[in-house]
Image (cartoon, rainbow, N blue to C red; front, side, top):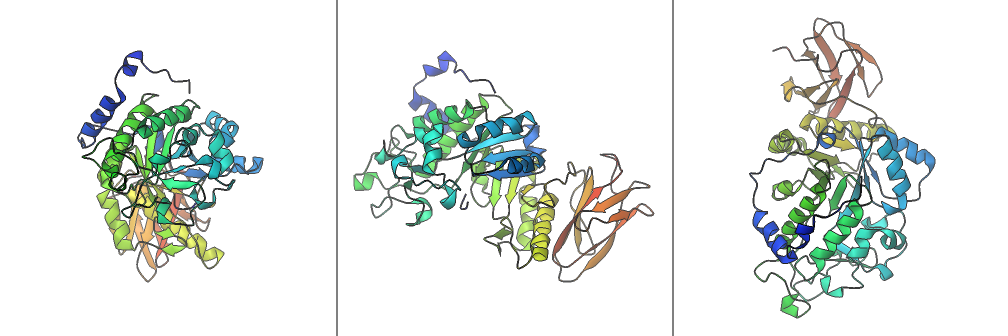
Length: 427
């Protein structure tokens, strides 16, 4: 990110297959987008997910994370006891890795609160993945720019000390990644969160800095082959294990290698509005097939506001847009505990209000500059909904729910009494 359970045994036959042959198998299959492929239900049916990157947390913090369906752990080894506790409560955990950047561990500072988007030295020393890809043992793994320079993450010379971009097309790196992934999965995690999925071209051979194992390929191509191989390894621990990828914006080229894709800075990033309504609405259509295939889009919004009320409004707008699209969303205290189930109808529009009916609720978005009041027809009687924003109870009258949505706002209405699956729209 820019900011921020039994032990597995390999089949002996697999060990006889040369790593290079396995890599070419991965490379050959990288373009295969026709294979039927679904994520486990626990991922795409999740409603909220938590992000936990610091080992400096209290027992109260741990209790607050029981509201989430799954946790993305930035520092798994530092928090392994808490990972187990949450898993024992039915909350899944996936561990942070990156094939875009790696540390030279002796040069990393102790940034224990995840400043710079990468863990501090104490976590690197304990974490089997970062140990496996330690650049201090393999400086030739560093990615080289067109002018012969070592590329820093995000091309930022002030990025956290010790970290560099890596080239996936150099001898030994892919094997190190797979060794590190085994180490993470052997800790009992439910999968991986693979960050920074935006590899750059490498010019190492042109400057005599290293050789590329596959001379006719460059880093972005061998990176994809590595993603395919990593996902196969993760799935060998069980079909309920997952790989979630973060390429910043959603990118179709990485859909095949994932059980879920993160859309970072969804609508809001660095407290700024990033996407307008037309982009958000188009994305709902563009990614419907991916979601309908049983995969997940994790929308991550960095919500700000000039005051508490605006912050709340922005959070509800991002949440409602995500749910309208069938995406997962995180993080806002007033919404983390909201449960509305799965969508049971398509996106519909009435008088400028865009809404969608879920098993246990309704989400609505008003992208216009003036407030709108509409009545949503429901095939249900004697029902009531809680307006989660205000906490008020809204009664269903004459098989209709009347809602008022302010301009440029989103709202969520949680069913108070209606049993799941009973709400259906009246045509």
